[in-house]
Each structure stands twice: as structure tokens, then as C-alpha cells.
Image 1 (cartoon, rainbow over the protein chains, first blue to last red):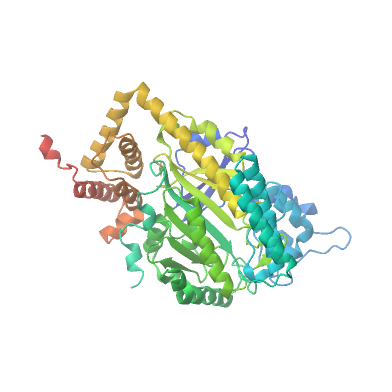
Image 2 (cartoon, rainbow over the protein chains, first blue to last red):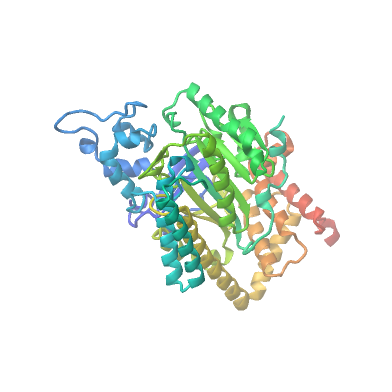
Length: 177
Length: 363
């Protein structure tokens, strides 16, 4: 995205302005942002105006309509069409994630720095085995970081944690926290 | 009314002045976005669903919050007038988005205001944990415990591959946004900040300035936060942010030393001029007040000023904002009237602090 002010440099800063409840948004490069004194700052802002970006990535002609079936994907639970998702930049419900799954990975890649898979927290209720597996993965990563930083004490502590978790897994996953 | 205590010009716990690097890192925030599985997200749900979502979340927090030692107050946004909503925004307790909400939405505030749970914002739930100073781990632990408590009683929208499902794909995964507010006067004065900002954006983080009204602005305060929420664990996200923030703090310290070494008299003059303005001005607009506050903060950090308490400055930064001034005055104020009220506020609060604010003594 190009800076809206100079039209030359890439936009790296998003400036949102809230004047008596009217929110406007500007995509600026760092030079114009530094010069811009009408910057209004507040804690809760999306890092980017996602719908503007989405609209550029998925030009209308290819966005929603499959050329063979001439069918617009519509979410059966909330009624959102892919077009509506693009114009808002927001999903209507959890089911949209499966309804729009053919396009989803591409979207996530773009807004999430190429990442498409969750590696963080998992709700406890979501199945102990999956939770333990992901936890082990996470601990191994931390262990690598510790080893690279020559923090061997920490690495040993993490290794023991992985061992305990592996035993839990082999024990059949029937473990409380 | 229960809301009243949250609208008073009374310090929230995140405005206190304690912790490591507190001279530069002013406050830390963790926000977790969550949705309930069985309801449509706020962009698609009905008013009836909105009420059910509120009821489900609120009953858990009001009943079980005590298990973690938090008492919560439930506030319906539609029960608040515009000014009251704006006050909560200025205190960072709700988002501007929630303040302008068109459907049934609410906020649950903990007694010490360190936790705020927004209901039916862009997602069903936004758990927000605020800490003074630079405390990412602590802020995350508090938000995470609250999240774990809630998930025992609620069924979250979660996907094995994509993680926590949110309205906006920029939040999908951890649903976590971690931010630190930094006071960077020396990097700003020396224009080094212009080189730092683009470098940070390339590393998956975002920098923004903070607070101000319309064209009036800022006071050298920046907010740095993670942009990516997917493919990294919560720990990795705040660890990356932690490392980046520490580097910026280090650079700010060096820039301050250089400033102090190269032009000590100019710096001292600037700091004391600003203290003079804050303690004696009769009209103060937001921009001037923010600039002077920044200078005085720097003066305290460099031990040039020793008789002003930093936590009072933190409070003034919040209470000098337009909605707070009007709330304090008990009536709507025009811009000029606000400048008058703002100048009075500064003289009053700094006088309480033992600073001479009576112009005639110097006559």
C-alpha cells in the first residue's frame, strides 16, 4: 500500500482520527506520519484497515463467483456472502471460517505475515491430547531458544517439562491439570 | 449509580508509577479477543443474541470473578450519555468502538480498574488487562487467568488449525494484542524516531502515537504493539515485543544522555519553562499541556526536577482530556472554556503537590 499523502513511499503507519465520534483513517509512510500533527492516538485500534487491503487483493471479478457453478459462497449460519466479508473485512460467525475456507488461507497469509496455523493457547475443554501436543511443541521451541542463548539451566527445566507431558500422552491423555 | 466511581478523576491502578523502566515505559496492556461458539459474531447477530451473549459472559464474571479476587461492576453502554462514554475511553477502560456501539453492549470493570471486559465490541468479548510500567508477563497472566476461568463456563469459538476465531482475520489465532506505551522525548527531539518506526513495522509490530484531541496532539508518547496474532504463541508474541521495547528504551536512554551531555543548559531551560507554564498558565490547550507534561516528565527522569511526583503527571495526562474536564466541571465546555479549566486543573493538582503556583509571589 502506498502512502495516501505523498503517493510515493509505502505506507507503514496507520493514523486513525476520532473527532467527536467520527473516525477517519489514513495510511501514511513514516515521513508523512512524522510531519502529520493531526495525529490522534488511542489505545484501541486495528493495526490496519483490513477491508481496504482485502478489496485490493481480491478484485471483484474473481472474488466470489466460481466460474463453473456461478454460485456465491454464502455462510449457512449467518448469511454472510464472500462479497460481504470483503467489503466489511470481518466474518459474521465462526462458521464463516469453514464457508470461506478456500480463500481463507490466502487471506490469513496476507494479514498474518505468512502464518496460517495457530500455535498458542488452547481452551482446556478442547481436548487434552491436542492441548498436550501443542504444549510440547511450544516447550520445544522455547527450549531451542534457551539453547541458542546458552541458557542451559532453563533448557534442562523445559526438557523435563516435555518429558512429563510425553508421559502424560502415553498414559492415555486421561489427566487433569 | 454504580458507574459513578469509575467516572471520578480518581487514579486507576495502571496510572500508578511503579516498576522497572517506568521512567520510559508508562503502561502495558494485554487484550484477548474471544467469541462464543453458539452465537453469530457482532457484525451479524440479532439484538436478542446480543443480550444473550451479555448475559452469558456477565453472569460468569459477576459470579465467579471473586474466585480470582476480582469484584466486577456491569455497565450497560446504552445507559451512559456521550460524555460518560468518552470519559471511559479517555481512561482506556473501553474502546472508541464500544463507545459508539449500536447494539446491546456492556463493559465489566474490576474494582481497581486493572481489568476491563468489553462485551459485544467487535467480538463477543475483549478481555483487557492494564498495568502501570513495563509488565507484559504480569498483564498477560492476569488476562490469561481470567480467560481460563471464563472458558470453564463458556464454549469458545475455537478451531484446531486457526485457533481462537474472531470477527477480523487480523486477530485470528491467539486473539491477543499486547501493547506498551512509551515516553520517547529524546528520540523524538533528535528525530531518531523516524528511523525506528519503519524498522519496527518490518518486524511484525506497529507503532502509534497516543492521545490528543482532533488536531491537538501528543506529548512524545508512543504505543508499540504486535501486529501478528497467528503462528506465534502468546509467549513468543510478548517476548518479541519485550525485546523490541527493551531496545527502544535503551536507545531512548542513550539519546537522553547525549542530550544532557551536549546541551545541559538548553535542556534545563526547556524543562523549567514547561514547569512554569503548567504551574502558572491561565489557558492551556491539549497540545501545549501534553508538550509541557512531556518536558516535565523528562526533567524528573533526569533529576532536574525533584519536587514533582510522577504519578500526579500520569493522572494529569488522563484528566486533562476534554471529556474528563467536562465531567469534572459538571457541564459541557467549549474549547476555550476547556483551556481555562485545564489550566486550573494543573495549578490545583501541582499546588497540592507543594509546587508554588501563585504568580503573585514572583511579582
